[in-house]
Structure formats: C-alpha cells, structure tokens
Length: 227
Image (cartoon, rainbow, N blue to C red; front, side, top):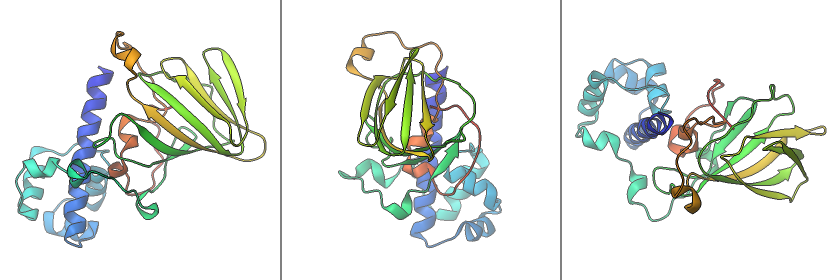
C-alpha cells in the first residue's frame, strides 16, 4: 500500500507542477486564478503543492480556464528538458517532524537520485526511527550530527559523510549548540534491492512528494510521514 500511496503522491505533485507552470506562464497570481475559476486561493495553493487531490470538476474547470486538454494538466516541461536547473529563488523550504528541507531536483524527471538540503533542528522532538526502500547519502555542512542507524550511533562533524541502507531504522539528531545543515541524496531503489522483496511497511521522515521542486510554493508546517 505504501508504494501505491507514494505513486499517487507523485502524480499529485506532477499535477501541481503543471498547474503552477500554466498559471505562471500567464502571469497570474493565485488570487487571480481563484477569481477566474471560482476555486479558493487556499485550495489552489494546496493543489500546486500536491497537498490536495483535485476533483474531476476542478480539473475540468482549470482546463477550460487555461484552454488546454485534460492530458496537459498532468504534464510538465520538466519531462522534456535534458537538464533541470533549480534556482535559489524557486527552492522554498518546508518543515516537518523537526526537519526543514529543500528539494534540489525533481523526482518526476530524474528519479534515481533525489537531492535535498536539510536542516535538523536541535529542538527536534521524539525518537522515532524511519525505514523505507532505497539508500541515502548525507554530507554534513555545518553543526554536529549523530546518525542513529540499526541500533548504532555515528557522530559526524562538518565535512563528514555517511552512506547507508535506508531500509534500516534510522534517525538524524542534531548535537551541540546549533542546528545541523545537511546535504542528503536519496536513491529510491538500489540494484541489490531490485532483487529483494519490498518492505511491507515503510516509515518516511520526508514524504515521497517532498522531493519535488514542483511540490514547493510556500512554507508549511504539517506533520506527516518522514526521515
């Protein structure tokens, strides 16, 4: 069920990316689109972030407003571009479960590597450990960090890196006097995992849709499944 849910989340993020592209190409604000469509600004914003599922009526309305086919509402320019550039102004951080993360690519186009910039708060609460398909590589930019992995802990200083199997229970913990700044690259499926059964249950610190630059348009703080 987790794989199905993640696929749906990615499709929602794809729709949101297409909606944002169509709106921005016309130079409309969210409020302008709300006025033209009769849909609320909040609802449209959540559609663009992939946080809400559009009804058939909403999709038909938006397709009519933009004078495009229904199919084009689920397509983005990213799919045809050989190189994806993420400008600093386009990458807006989101916060969840004591983590602030900024996707640095778009999983719709290049799905084998999913890079994000991550801030681990000193005030992060709880001790939940997370496990999901794939592997992760982290590089500590600043601060001090402890990687708790499969019953062991690894202390990292700036310049240190760690590469691990994310099927193993893991958690990132900031230490010292400041938040930890991290570069994280996730790979959903390693070659060895392709030959192994999928995990029946997965628990993510950052939701699958969180790796989409297209899923980001405004800062939000909402608990969800994460790292």
